View (cartoon, rainbow, N blue to C red):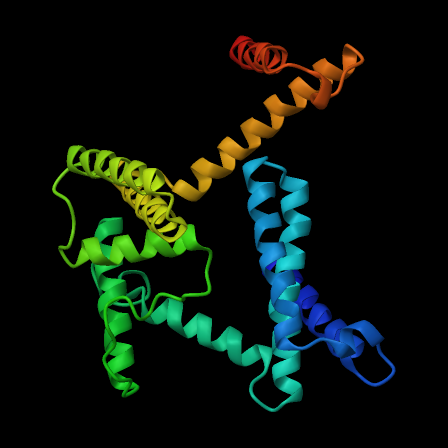
Length: 269
């Protein structure tokens, strides 16, 4: 049996299992779920997939992708029960979309670079909306507001830059960042909570733009820094425990020394 055939059989099995869980006499928990109640699990599964990728945990990634697929099947099952659509409608839609938006692969189109592919993709997407009679939207209206703020900032700044609303070089973004830091300091001196929040938001947005100019994914950069902090903090905690101490009865100098030790150990590996 080919890999494609095996995957198809397993997917059919997953769809059937989900239908059984939601059917009368099925699982009480699964039967109680709604579109809204499942949303938090979808977000959780998404981050678990990303975490497995970050750790290059291929066995874990295999399992997490199964959980991720379950989310799509769960939503589709609930939609089918309400007469909206079925999972095969979703599969048909994505297959047709991929073929339609890759004319350089499945048709007589031409695109030799990833940049050309992106331009062509956006052109086809725009034409599809016009053919569906959708009202013209503002450039940023298509960006979901419910996504994490860091990701939203990435997409907003990229869309604006594509329209020509952008800095000319990285140095200008760095200068803007210094300007935002100065404005944050002024707001902090005034002790106005709303102004401090606003200026801090401006600074974070500018940093996202700096990441774009440096061709760094800020989400991944922050995730890696979070992981690094976890490791070093755990070293500090273990060091204090080894001395029979806890954080509350240790000096900042002791903790800093262990922190620097953790950094040294990382460099030596």
